[in-house]
Each structure stands twice: as structure tokens, then as C-alpha cells.
Image (tube, rainbow, N blue to C red; front, side, top):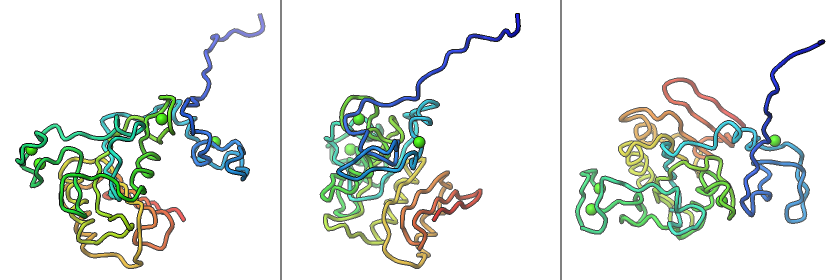
Length: 231
Ligand SMILES: [Ca+2]
Ligand SMILES: [Ca+2]
Ligand SMILES: [Ca+2]
Ligand SMILES: [Ca+2]
């Protein structure tokens, strides 16, 4: 006998069955043609390889500070966080966090409890983060089971104010979000008020900014440990 070794099982990388998964080069690029343009093989985040290890835990809460989220979206609704400390529709702030009937996050732009999306951007971003994966419809998010806290601080025209974004960050902090996603930008100077807002209370493990207040295209800051920047 020349060799002896275990007869290992190998597993295929997970390719989800979601209808439009193949349209997303960023997740898995095999050079497929999307709307007349051919992709570049493997220019992607290697999502199937990552999903082979984990498709994400449902205890991870991602606050999306954006234009809101379509709460009835069939590929998102299962992953929208419900505030279990709040009794809906009774006109009372049951959990004492300063916001009345905040079941699905908060609308800081209009100062009410309905963070519905009147622009579309926030729903799109949420889909990339946490659309339900492998359910046969729509797309697959990076984290199939993460829970989304919808914090609307941007208006229908896509604009938003510092004075609406800061309380949204504070809310995410207060309510225990693990990650806050900020897919927005507009000014090239660092706001001192933002710095204060980001730093108070506990430190977030991860803060994701896409074209926010820096000139860098993408900045991922890990507070309390180190800063990683990607152009
Ligand atoms: Ca790849
Ligand atoms: Ca409340
Ligand atoms: Ca209530
Ligand atoms: Ca899906």
C-alpha cells in the first residue's frame, strides 16, 4: 500500500438560488454579461467562498442611516429589526428611549416613527447588506440573516442634515447596533459634532462609511483599535 488517508468530503461553494443574484458582479464575478456589459472574472468580494463558512448571524444588528427602508419588501421584511421593548401604536414610549412607538427604527428627517423609504436608496443599500439569501427571490445580501435597524435621516430628494444624522447615530448607539452603515457623503471636512456623536457611549466595533466626509472612496474605521482605509 503506497498511501492511506481519510476519504474527505468536499463541498461546493454556496451559490444562492435568488433570481437576480447573477446580476451582482460585486458578489461573484464570473465574467457574466449584465445588461450588455461583460464582467471581469473574480473582481468581487468572493461572497460564495465566504458563505461557505457563514451566511451571517441573526444577532448582528446593522443600523442603516439612509433614506429609510421599504418595510414590506418581500426580500427584506424578514430581516428588519423589531424593537421588542416597544408596544406598537399605543402612543407611549414603552422602552423609555425617548422615541414613541419606535417599532422599526425612526424617521429623523420627518420626526416620526415611520422610517419608510421615499427615495429608494436606503432600500437598495439594505438589500446589499441583508437581503434574505437563498429564498428563491430577489437578491442575496452579504449577510443573509443580519437584522436591519432602519434609521431615516435623508429626505426623498436624497439630501439630509447633520442635525438629523447625529441623533440617528445616537439612536443606533443607544439601541445596541453592532454596525452602522452610512452610504452617503457631501462635504470634505470632518465634522466635530460627528466625532462627538460617534464617540460617545460605547464604541462601535465597526463603522462603515462609503464616501462620507473623507475624500477616500471607502473608509472603514474600527474605533478603539485601528483605522483601515481603502481607496
Ligand atoms: Ca470571486
Ligand atoms: Ca421607544
Ligand atoms: Ca409604544
Ligand atoms: Ca433573496
